[in-house]
Length: 440
Image (cartoon, rainbow, N blue to C red; front, side):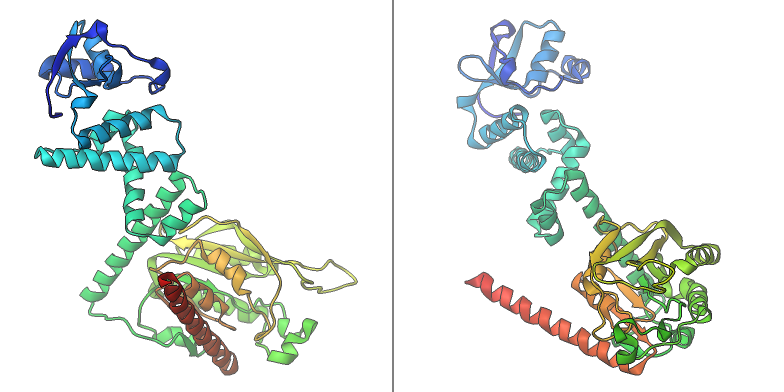
């Protein structure tokens, strides 16, 4: 209830300027009238000195429905500053056609002001009260206040999304996904504690054969797995771009590819969390086999529409006399459990190939793009055949909690390890520089 003197005036003397009022339909008038009939008018309406309505149109309508001829009111010049601020915010929200972010700011400020008023009176003010007074859906108020809380906390993802002009529902969904992931991570850490596991601190890249290493692994389970196995297309015999000759190669037979897929599927329930994302790069030669084998032998749910890396340079020309140049590569993705993504991105990305350190490098810019869907600060990532290590570096750019790459070739593992540490040092130096610049 507002402070100050109440006035008992004639309903007929009140002017309502409809052109300046909130243009939505007045809802819930019958229910409000029944409440007023039972408990009385708890909050008086507000008028200016010309008896023009400033706040309380629903209350006025309810009193008219009850066929009452008088009503209690306040005048704006009698309100204390806090009450007047709340009134002005309410009227601005109702009168102005606002972008959602502007409305979000004003609703959050109005709610905070009303909570402060209620605290002074030793009363309570809820989201439901704010929604009712502003005639805004309570779900929308909840969204606005949730976003406001993240902005006050300096959440970089929320700030970035708003600066990019994302919609309210997009920002709210992103917050919900982040909260879900943090909750899952908390549960995982509790399970680790209960089971007496403290979590092994492993080097980021291990020189080992994944099919042997996985037999004895008993450390942290992974919630994101990036698989880029040899495609089984005889790439070790190809010499386009001279990358094989320059960097060396693995055996790349159909048998090798299918063996790696089978080993991974057998070990997935043991090394992956119940809620986990997966990416599987593959050759179109084995699309149906790969999709069917993973679907039939695991509880991983795959999306039949793959992610596509479009090569903006020459691509691959397997047989210039019989077919076209192949300008893209494909990657299945899916999840174990209902694991929500972090961000929505396009399912294609265009960039040139890289052959600096490895025969079949997946470019880091492309991986960063797709990893935006899956990787955040709760991610524990495994790359069973990490090659040049670009996937590990891309994940760390998105603040992955930890990354682990397995690489069978000792020389490739050394190069990838050096590149990873160089990237970490560069980011650290840039962070220090940004901090210094921020103080100038």
